[in-house]
Image (cartoon, rainbow, N blue to C red):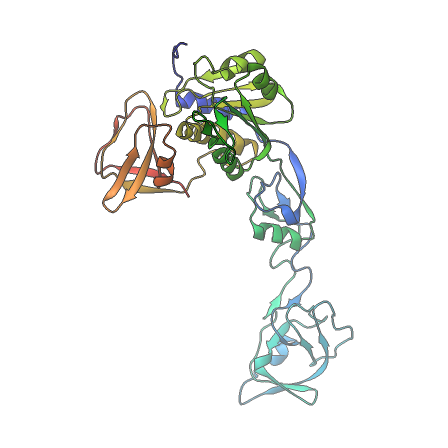
Length: 402
């Protein structure tokens, strides 16, 4: 065994990720399944919405100018010569001074330009008495009032919400072009690691990292291509690393410099080990590189280190590949430090913290295997490499574990 000759700066590792991870090609998806996908190109409206003049109220369609002067003490009367319903327009011709009964969403009859709401008109024996005037185009949804034909309605890179898909459907679109989701292969090393729910020996440990990583990959817009528990056989690990089909490979465990830490040497032999060892705590044994077009991230086996290295580097790559913003996806807030957060110049610290009544408290400054610290924490604070920490009263940004 040997230690790291040097550790690379976090900024250098982030720059490598950004240089390697560019948005994947587009693929079509049904508009029904478009929620949470990332739009691959500007969406231009093929039609106007509304595509015809339509009533915005239940009432009576007429010419607005004909109602001028109407009032409670001067009701104006109009003959009602038919009706217009949604999807069933009035088909006849209308003489001047006539009205048509109309429902919300129905096409406005040719020659008419306003709708008097039903509460301001009294109908008797085929005629209505109007007690309030309406102006031309009042209570009418005009052509293109919502969306003009040819307008850009959704911009490239938008993470689609359910209402965005609904808008696309209102334009008659059955499919949308979205960025392909990154395919992520999850490889777990270690002879001592066993699946949850199965018997284990006295020195074995249950595989917690896989569950954490699955949730994080899903959060960042990736999809699991496969999940394999490999043990510590170098040949088996090499075959899993080099197999085609994944855009990103996450290796949990075996990333350091111990006798059973095969992944770094295998990555260097099969492709490129670009970075190994980073000046941060936890996660200093993390590494990254590529095999062909596949990005490979070596995540330490200790659960907090694994989470930290994923969030800093692998998650960023997955988000960028999927067309999402690279930055942390966590909700954030400003808080005042109540108890000193200690760090050291020359390394980045990922500090789990708790929001207390009197301010922010560090929950654990070490213990990369203490996964429960992340469940007891409200979030984390990043201490930059040029800082020795934050004293009481300091204002810091907290990234929340939502």
